[in-house]
Amino acid sequence: MRFLRTGLFVLAILFAHGNPAAAQSYSDAKAALDAKDFPTAIGILKPLADEGVAQAQHDLGVLFANGLGVARDDAQAVQWYRKAAEQGDAIAQNNLGEMYRAGRGVEQDNATAISWYRKAADQGENRARNNLGIMYLLGAGVRPDKAEAYRLIRKAADEGNSAAQKNIGFMHEQGRCRAGPGPGGILVQKGRRTGQRDGTEQSRPPL
Image (cartoon, rainbow, N blue to C red; front, side):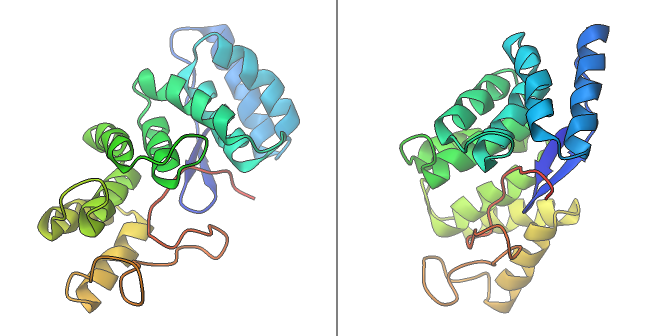
């Protein structure tokens, strides 16, 4: 099962391609994740990740990023996200972008964050579209462009992304929103347990 986060993970079934044994092992990992038996899941995911299974690499990144079944380790999270992202995994690309945006496990770098968000958005990942739109809105690592910000966030909202829907509502309330920090400049406070106040999204497990 695959983690998608908006505040905590929603799992979606994704089997390892072309390898029945790996697919079965990944199914076992999914069952462990569903049961929130994270140590068991890690024991199954790690060999798969070492074999190059992108889904397992992504999921290990999520577990390390959130300290589930293992001590939180942002550098390890970045390592696993990157391996999956370089294989074209759109969710890992979005998450790697978020690590760069937040400066977790890597030096903070908005330009690199945008690059990864864009790769994921180009594959249809709506969390990445929302995140990329926010970067355009705030002028973080890119020239401010409220029209492009609205286009991206609107598209993510139309695809059902709840954070993007909240962001669009806020933008309408504020006349497309005043960029920058401070009252009225922060988009939305999503999810009482996310700790994020800028409207961006990463993938995380359900607790």
